[in-house]
Amino acid sequence: MARGDGIHRTTARNARMKDADIGNAQAHNEREKSSYVNQDIVPERTPYNVHFKTPTAGYKEMFEQMRSDGVISTRGLKADAEKFGELIFDVNSAYFFNHGGYEFAKQFYADAYKAAIKIVGGEQYVLSAVMHADERNRAMSDALGQDVYHYHLHVVYLPVVEKQILWTKRCKEFEIEKGRFSFRLTAPYREERRRAASEAAKNE
Image: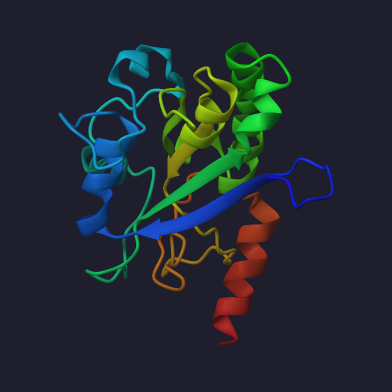
């Protein structure tokens, strides 16, 4: 966004959501509603939305499948924990309008999605990534006498926490930290690390 200095900036808002919130986020992001409070959403433009990662099921169902498959561990997770995260990348509409519009926005957010993957720790934790191209910027459209759309990117992910621990018989998965959850440890340790951990455990 611009701050009056002629420089365009992108922002990335990071929201955390509980089970009670994620359904509405899914309905908005995946355009599952029959009508919207936001009157600037143009349903005829929805086919122009671009998925950089398409969800394979509902967000909650994907969470449960990953838990069932052992990709994540919910050991110690509180019932009302914020299980889901959402990054929203946004740039002022004028930036895209002046640089080629829709095609430029697609390339820009393709690169933003690559950055999002690094932020969240890997694409395996991303449930959905979609660029919205169907929301009209009313003020710019009225001022210019033509339709101008506000392009932005929603990335829904699982906020995993990797906590490094030594290998012992008593501990074979990552711990839960700060109400979030983590993925199960699957990579084998080298033999010398196992021995070192074993000796450390004996001295506790």
